[in-house]
Length: 259
Image (cartoon, rainbow, N blue to C red):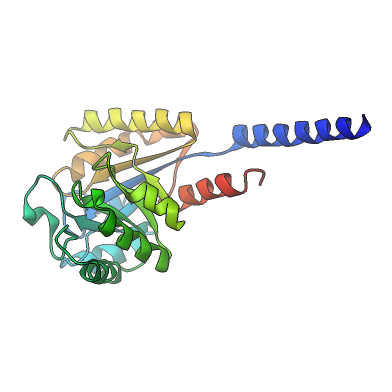
């Protein structure tokens, strides 16, 4: 009976500890801004602002290195915004050396490694467009293998519900997180503000949230909408953090739930 009593006390202790940790866990949201290196609108607003965005930089453009260096100098996290073949859209939207479904595994590896090399300080990667390519298991496997080799995390931008990124990343042990909200799919400040509130709600419900916005055509609208909701996030006790910090928290909760 004494052994049973001790066991019950221990179980109660660990359950209480886990419950207390859940209550005390800081709620964090990441805001990824795509198309650095390509789009111009809003670049200065974001990189000289005080919202700790994660800058997703297009590879192989005239501004790739410049925007990555600028973001790094201003203390922002950087990731590679990897162009991938969509089901619809103009080829010109992809930029140079996109990942397309007609490429060999060797060419995919070559292009992905070159893309990573072209973006200084990158800690992760996400897909630019890619609704067709992310459904191709062979292509996704090569990308995930390279991410593992180069110690990068992956953000699935959510351009296809049939994306192979989650299952292959899990299989190969590569940190991955999926986008929850697009901020500027409609180009208006009021819409961005509504989407920011949606991000806050998701973050309250699951402890973390991931949103994607853009520089370029919607850049100034996106930056204005985000900035106007900064106070709302502070009121809710939600901290905007780099993607790597959120992924680190997810890994810790999965593998070390009592710490």
